[in-house]
Image (tube, rainbow, N blue to C red):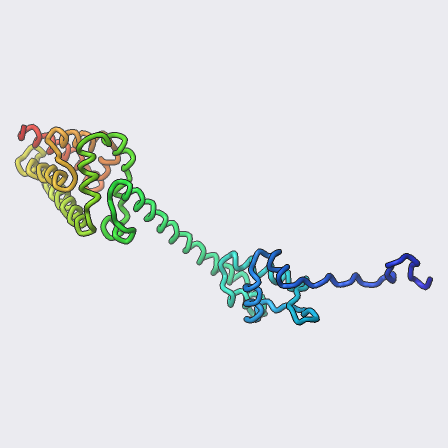
Length: 272
């Protein structure tokens, strides 16, 4: 039968498979998970021009169009702009590896920035839970990289039922950024005075050392809660017992934590 089978619907031997039917824009949008508006925009800017039109003039996409769309969406997922994508797909002189390398560097930089933002948000949430009502920007301005609420949960667990804790929470909740800057400056001034005395070799039980210890106690009383001499002595013991608090002073000068402890204890004994 001259190479043609007698079966109904048969085709000539060796004839090419018919080209798959083109898909309308709505179907392509559904399959790709994008909006029809997005595909229209890609068409307008020449990024993805459908290679077919229906008899009514509607956009239709063939296999090659769908492959190009897959590449576009993959690059978009990696954060590339539409102009960059067009350059990679259409510019014969573009170096895809170099473009990918630059994008990789940009993504790493963005990740680092997002991690910094996440850390600030976490500190802000912890601080507000502790009663420090500052915005993320104010938190950075006042405390920098320091987390003033890093022991918030532990403090609540250990002292949450005490009057001192409740008094501290009430005071902190009313502090503005300027109040916190003042508290920070006073705290730093006391720490600097203690460091100067220690590095000058002044004994921890001297009057100057005890005056510095008293200034430390008064700063706590003024800013947070009424700190009795007994409570102050307990804090001094914690400065040696807890490595985290010891480090705070040891970072200023080796041996300072012990000196602060001894000065606070001497002052408490003398005042008693």
